[in-house]
Image (tube, rainbow over all chains, first blue to last red; front, top):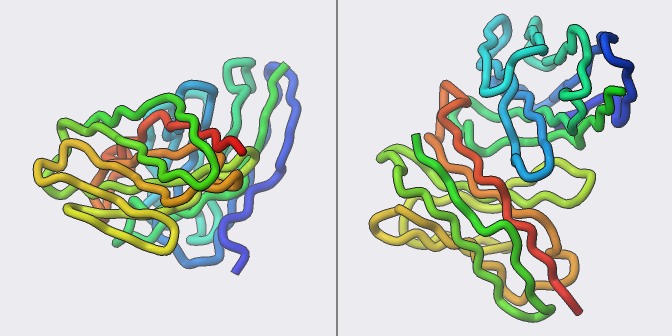
Length: 113
Length: 113
């Protein structure tokens, strides 16, 4: 199993550009989440999903959209990138019965100029 | 919701035992305590989880007092490769809502030769 795969690993955007961060898992996990990690602020939840077709907002959802058309994939869309969205983004997945044991991808380091 | 507090940083030397404490005064009855390890340029990785008393695996031990208002991650005889950031997570085991999972800000452990 590959686990949780995130692409790309690095990305530089200009202010106002849009892009999609990809996340895929091959463990048949029901739950998937997107976090951003900034220095001194730990992990903050952006959006999460408890199953295909079901998504909900986390702590910092503004400026981001998600969808979950399949169990495996959970892309994160930046609609109009802003410098405040410069961060490291992590995707995670977990079983429904073990939501606090999450498997993380390697992350996407995003810079918005 | 429980709030988790952990030291920002700790220093140790190879071969020593390291104890990292997390405070979670408002922990709920159905909350579990989970610890993660994160190396630079990687996503967090699950280490250990517990509900009460003591849990031990091949990597670490987790001590939880009877009142469950704190927990201590114990790393026996650390090596240079244990240099990482350690996160405490508090929340229900089968969280239907990821917002019930409360992350600490992380403790940066530096192991010196």
